[in-house]
Length: 123
Image (cartoon, rainbow, N blue to C red; front, side, top):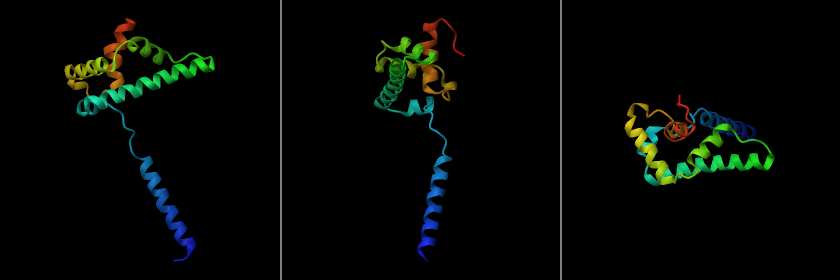
């Protein structure tokens, strides 16, 4: 095979690999994933989620804009809750609602911790 054919085959294989990778569904951490995770994995997920909310808040402050209502509400409701407490509450929520294990973890956190603090029922 000549060099052009090698390059063409190589590029084709790379494009196929990229296309196949793009077809993978995004991972949403739901109750099924949560309940099979270790305590440390759960806390690591929550630390990451909390970091993203803190990053949004800091970015908005730096740019002189208002952070999203969801980020502000979540931050205000959970700002004084430890990772262990948050993890325990989410775990308890899934244990008490086994038919809702398809709900993303942050949805369960919203229903259990954020919505009650706002006085508005979660949907």
